[in-house]
Amino acid sequence: MLVDSHCHLDFTDFDADRDAVLARAKAAGVELMVTISTKVSEADKIIALAEAHAELVCSVGIHPHEAGSEAPVTGAQLVALAAHEKVVGIGETGLDYFYEHSPREAQQKNFRAHIEAARISKLPLIVHARDADEDTADILEDEMQQGAYPGLIHCFTAGPELARRALDIGFYISISGIATFHWVLHFDFGHCHVQQCQNLAPNHRKHSAGAAFGRDGRTVSRTCAASWQTQ
Image (cartoon, rainbow, N blue to C red; front, side, top):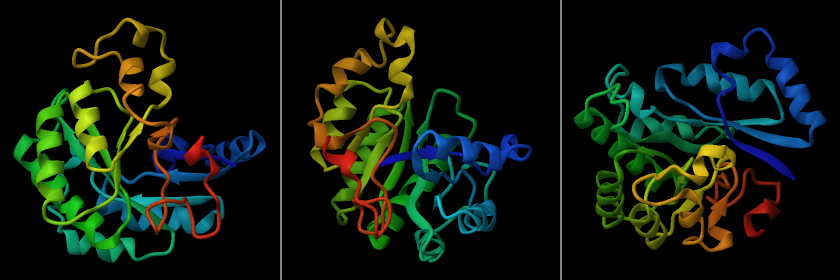
């Protein structure tokens, strides 16, 4: 079973041909797609989109780029939104110090609220981390002391230290499409080639596109077997 575990089909870019995109994905053998939230203010929109298509599920959350412009959200608010049967993950959240579209303090507060929601809901946390390895790992570890929660580092482009620390707390590592870019072979992300970081993770803790999302933190839905988890 092929699953696209990280897409943004709610974006206006797809307004003109969203149905055609879904049809092409189905024709290519993609049976399930997880459309990832970037704004809680648009949660109703993304949930409605998932409701309208059997092959779609979604997450709820605020991307770090939007942490400064979206209204602050609490863990309890995210948990309430995540109660919908079509919601299978929390995020995407995290820290982005490369673009810094939002103040770091706002990003960090937003990040912790999402971790709280993942802890309570038991849904996987979808973490975006760019040029913020140390703060990302510090927050993940600090929050893990308050209670366990599942998650992954989405679209991993960080260094070996973040990879090790994330794996040590039980996280998954997403080796996404960026690993196919020709310049990745030569570009040093945080003094670690992406290919080198792949070797740190056992096969069952790596994903080629994102995470194994589900209400039990392991599968993309209550009924589908995510066989690609163990490959």
